[in-house]
Length: 139
Image (cartoon, one colour):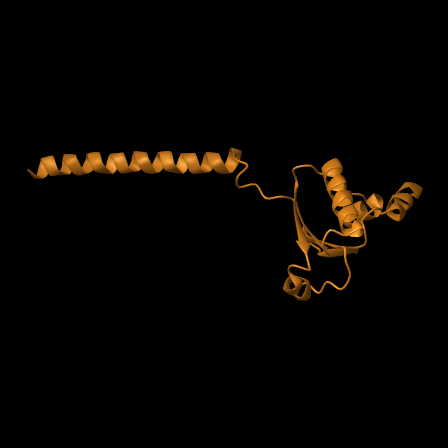
């Protein structure tokens, strides 16, 4: 009887090990391949006031910049401070439209309609500042 019980326990342990192994393999595969766990490289928040012309222009300009320079690699949240004034207070937003780059660090803020794409890209560290390029080519 003990031998039969041991064989039964061994079978159950084998099934558990196999089930655990397949679950672990599925999890590791999801981490390696799956995009569900992928984080956006740029986390951006754009603070606007309603659907004013400046706000709409800022949203359009920012989406264009993002799609042209790092598509599928950003997360954008547009926050209307008329609807959520507490968020603006907490983030110390004093002018709108304001873009806040949360990640990657360092945190940066841009005020205006974001029409100067070059300036925004330099601020997001996509392009290096022109002075840096000029200095490195002089040496």
